[in-house]
Image (cartoon, rainbow, N blue to C red):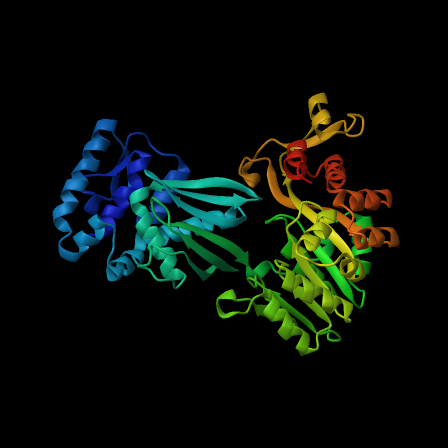
Length: 487
């Protein structure tokens, strides 16, 4: 074995937290001394990062500490000139940063983290430096999970690698930056949005993972109740009007919109979208990337779209009065318009539009339906067990225990990373326009009045849909309470 002067310090930093240190003749023997032999996962991680066959030898805590000190002292005189400045001062030099980001162990480490996150079906990877550690956490089924903890000294190298891959300014650490990484792992082509944010202990970096190989989603796969799916399919075939999808960030709104556009897409219709960002590219649909820095916001994009003779418009989000006004005007002049809002329930979308300054009569005239949605974690099918619902849980859920005496819970297994959950399923609340509801909207009625009217007309609320999915063994009481408590 032979390693460059920068590579071996990286090894030392990576291995030290695990109670592992290179032996004194590591460069020739490839022997690692351990205070206790690590488990299979740690051994695989070490071998993957080093990229060589290594041997693990049991040693005492004192021996590991002595070897760690030995390597710190031994490596200092080896790293001379510019390389010494790079390693000791925080890698401020751009050329040194690029060299470090191109080191084999750093490349392997980043690839290892990508592979781990993909195995977990993560939607995001977070690189979070603090005073002592660099924590790597993934958002799995909407919940943050830590997958690695490294010494914070390795952060500069990892951050430089990510910024190099995203074609960002590798030396700029004072300002936020945004970029994209196209990365192929196996047969999967990933498109990752990269966001950097300066922090006290270094840049926080977040990657949003978009799997290009998994872009086609059918409406029937989203988990809509059959009666909701039937009405929704009918509404989206209307020739004109506006349909809103509401919910907090991460509730699957974009997935629902893309599945909808896939359903109605045909050669007989012109469909144009304006999005920020364009998450997936849909065949046969013209998609516009909004860019506020050059004046191409949602409102400006919409103004241009309507001159392109479209049949169907999709606006990524209604954020202001101008976008709302143009969207409604388009719906009233013969276009089918889809968009999203961030509200807790369907009726709240009406209030949000009113708060933006849109007149009630315009809202009532243009709206076809509002669908609120959430995502709850699914019980892992490999380790699901049927258990009794206790009285306390029934009380919190607000249902008689006789309604749902048995529920399913996952005991934890390899398939679900011992969480008891694998994947997510949607909860849906579809508010369809009726004469009575239009009357309430036109008269600027409170959202609660609109909601009560919709319930009286048969609308199933988010909580009611969640209870149905609980009864069907798809989720757990904890998930129902966690996701629908604000609905």
